[in-house]
Every structure is written in structure tokens, then in C-alpha cells.
Image (cartoon, rainbow, N blue to C red; front, side):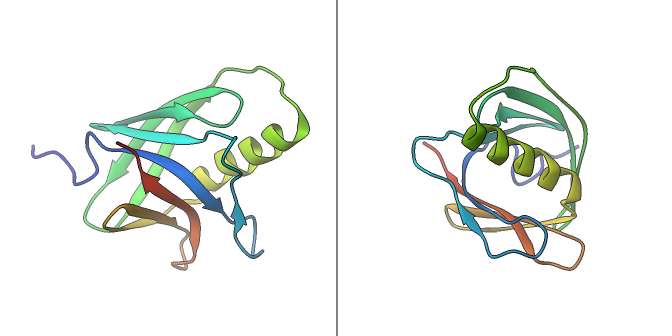
Length: 118
């Protein structure tokens, strides 16, 4: 089985959308990351580390089996973390344009926007 196009890539969240709100920009001092390793994903969700599985094809994506550590952090971190982890559950498609990755909902609206990391 050939690796999927996002295998062995790492990303940093730069914006997220909650419900139908306008996108929220992630402050530089808050680190939210996503790394693809075959059918597994892992990263930092602002306050905690998380991991799970991903099913990808040319345009669709679904995340499942997500688990994370459970440390409590100050409100800005926890609010972004909660929104991020919730948005991952709603992802149904993806699009990569150069050093940007968008994860989208079932209507094609962007939920999470990432920049590639070195």
C-alpha cells in the first residue's frame, strides 16, 4: 500500500473555526501541531499531547480514536485546545496548497488551517 500524500509531514495550526464563526488566529505563543505517520497522527493541542488515527484518500479525511493527556492549563490554552480537538472530529476533507493545509467539514468549509513546519 502506497503512503498517503500527507504521510511524514508536520504542521502547525495557524487558524481555526468554531461553528460558523469567522476563523480565529492562533497566537504565536500557543503551539498546536499535527504530525502524520502512516495512519496515525499525533501532536500538541495547546496544553496537552494527543494521538489518534486518520483515514485519508485523495480528498477525504476522518480522524478517530483520539486520546490525549489531561493536564489543566489557563483558559486561553484550554479554549483553543477544546476547539481544536472538537474540530478534528468534524473533519471530512482536506486540501494542501504548498505549505498550507486545510482540514474541512462536510460542506467544504475550512475548520483548521495549518502551516508546514521544517
